[in-house]
Image (tube, rainbow, N blue to C red):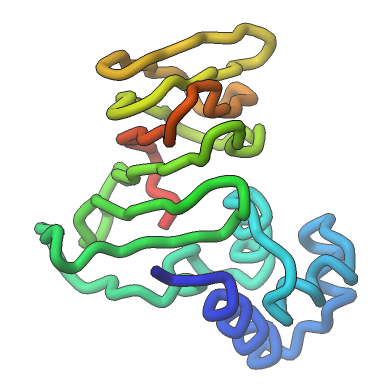
Length: 182
């Protein structure tokens, strides 16, 4: 599993190679200098939203911060999963989409602990979520939707949205996002 310490080192390396100070990165991302410093030292968790802000400010794609293979790869075998863990609130993201130029969507399996949530955010594109296991509460703008195993939700991701695990077991969701995040 790709942990925060590896991602942190990559962020720091790219920032320094571009001669960008923490102050400048802070101004470009609207994230505090102290938070960015903690991220680079691997002592603070990252959300996808914060990571995306940092990638945009450094003028790199998210995949380069995550440093996983980006050559043409159409199949993911269960023996070689790609996991990311950025927030303490959930176990992991498992990347399940192929890697090739100009792809239009991203497949991710989110595993979220009981009582935890994915932070509220919005971005361009669409999201499709299939509940594989557990019980989820999706909040889209001001409307809440409870979903259980086998149910699906599909919405424009330009709307502010969050996902909470409201069940008594781990929540597992197969998500397809456009445009690709990683």
